[in-house]
Length: 488
Image: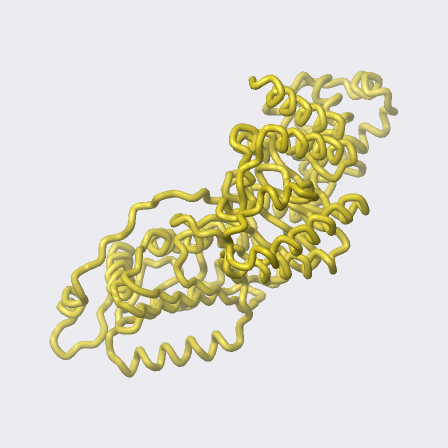
């Protein structure tokens, strides 16, 4: 039995469906339908599933659930929920925002006053007490000119991550974070892969543009097994430490220098055994040649390059005199950068013609390009906006690529991707470009193998229901061309 066969069996009984009539309606043998009901076979196409739903007279919501159950039965629950986790991450990717900053306490006097005379530790016997102490020690550290924080915990402490995603340090603030990943797929109660649940919690810290470094080690344990440890988590600053339970209900606050030194030594020893999970680097004009070299290197070794972003990738069509017209020649090393950009354009077009590049994008994401000639994937400092004729030329080239299958327009639920997400998957390299809350353009590279493999699986096996057919996509672009031509 499968989820699909269970649902089909329930509908057959609840709605008193005559299997022979259903089989006849679908132009199939009755014995085949009994195999569907018992889970020995699955329908071979989504069209057949929808035909069954039509005969049973399912509501739109029931039809959607029926179709999703069929997909789950076809690829397995693990693969289904893993791909749904990626989908959730993409649609929930944080946009640039002006988040309120956290106020700094006046020094650490209030912290020290909490300790009784002669005592160097303090019991925290409630979630409120743990949260209050975490807030105090982290804000005190962020107020320093050279703050440092170490975290040894899973990225599931909402209060802590909200704090770090909004804090505005007085100087530099380095955060080193170690957490564990399971060797086998593990899901939350809401069927989200833990790696992506963690990533969604951590990414707002990257958006805050603090010096955040993540490391992981692997275990064969599920998350719940951590509850058997008494105080497995650790939060360190230069002056204080908190060890706490995995549910953040109980902890101990320390200030003894010898204990702190021991904790820092233990953390450093564990860190040396871990591997980086993600890496970030800024996209700046002064280092544009290095960025082009990075892009060229990653794409040259890939069998296929896959992209997903709100707007189409326009860069491959900026060839000939257009690059010279658009490029900001006042940038440092402009004379050297323009030939590199032209070379990259030619290589991108070669990838498209060789069917080694696929770009997924949205109709709604094209708005700023249509209205203002802006190319969101390129920082505005690097170029001048395209005029109407240049936009029309680029769109005509994109329409051709839509018909060829290299450019694909996304449907629901991916048809309104957040404007801040641009993902590139080239061979063993997966990267995101995004803007921080303060406006810096950053590149975020995934280095952890299992997360990288999940992204590969999602994009390489993109559900055809999630994007338009080639001719439909080309017609959408041609409609946009007419809007530009008529000014409507």
